Image (cartoon, rainbow, N blue to C red; front, side, top):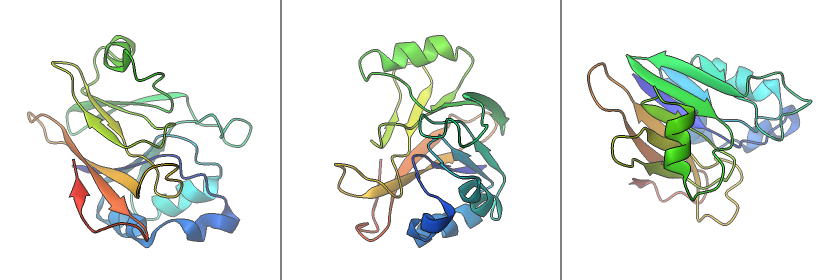
Amino acid sequence: MRALVVADTHLTPATLDRMPSEVWALAAEADVVLHAGDVLDQAVLDALAAHAPVHAVQGNNDEGRLALPGVVTLDLAGTTVAMVHDSGPTAGRHRRMARLFPTADVVVFGHSHAPLVERDGDGPLLVNPGSPTHRRRRPVHTVAWLDLAPGEPPTAEIVEVGPLAGGARTQ
């Protein structure tokens, strides 16, 4: 199973055209889309759902705009995936996520706009896709692929999208 992971899109119906075209193409290839918050408008989720089923959590900028859960835990291809918008400070993140989601094989989060794929020992694989629309101080806009198969360890990769993308995939 392939999951397209996005976060921090910060789009409205009036700005939906700012989503890089690669994101729509990747969503069409995905079995499922995971959105780790700061959606801003249902139109974003509806547009993604036109390509694949979508699961989303509420981000700090979604409050009062969308009624999304703060945490989602899913079984995808026999893999437990937990999703939350803000994982907190970098220091202690692995221990904190393992403590908050003791059965999770993967924890997906956003908020910082800083792409990350990282594992610490036997803890969950942490995945922050960055942002496809608001890169902040990052060199490129990004999303992530999450690959899941029964009996196999989950893997993820960061994918550059948008006008600054070099077409290269980074880990």
